[in-house]
Image (cartoon, rainbow, N blue to C red):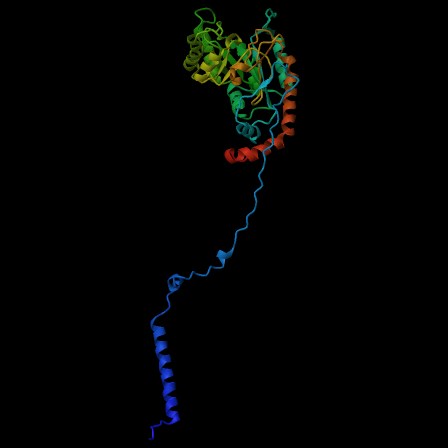
Length: 389
């Protein structure tokens, strides 16, 4: 039986035609359904995107060196002080101290202050142990000037002692005690104000005298004029004055002496005193505490233990045979700024060279330890207090 056979070329044509038709269909489907642009949705769930080139970079870790702060140097001491009058510090925060010490616009290390008290200067014969002649006064003022000292007022001293604010490298606080007429200031101290702008402090007793040539009203008027001129710096010296504010005195009496001075100064001088020159040089823990409560910043004794520097006050810690019982120990009160020592005019000229040398020694000691203190500051303090300019 014969079967139907298609010619070979006919079968080949049909096969290739089918292939061509399939290709056309696939091309059309591809054009109708574009590939999604979001790679994550286009991948099967079991696959993860290939990481980009930046994700393959591993950060390099650099070890930070741990800096150990150096030990700070000991407090500056000098053989020019009596061993029973060691320097006391009052800035407890080491970082605050170093910041104020080395801040470029503050006083340089070694800046020193000599406080001199004048109780009485006479044009006649010297008749009392607390008195000097006009000639001796002139010698003192010349001696200060020749050694490069410059006078400051109480506000400048307070800013220096508290914050190391800039003052002359060799400064002197000239203090006149008690109630003096304007003749006293105009004759003795005004020439130094007019020539060199040297102010003078008056530790002023705020009581009123009932009568006499220098009665309360007339004397107050004279002081009001001097105060208005600005070169006589009035500070408190009590009201009754002759009763000393030492241990055993009542709080009411202490308040009367300290607040009484404040009230009188507001009335007559339109100011509030910032310093108390303790009457008779006497004090107590309570008198210091009350003075602080009332806003006093500085206090002065009668004990000439040494000069002053920033965060450095010579004080006694106990009664010793060297000075005797008249020198109350200030150290136990634990507030050096309220118990500052001062020299007396009767022998101040004998101590000027010592004061100069103490300042020079302190400057040398500070320079020798500067790098250590600055390293300590940079490691420990700068994160909180900032860098030093």
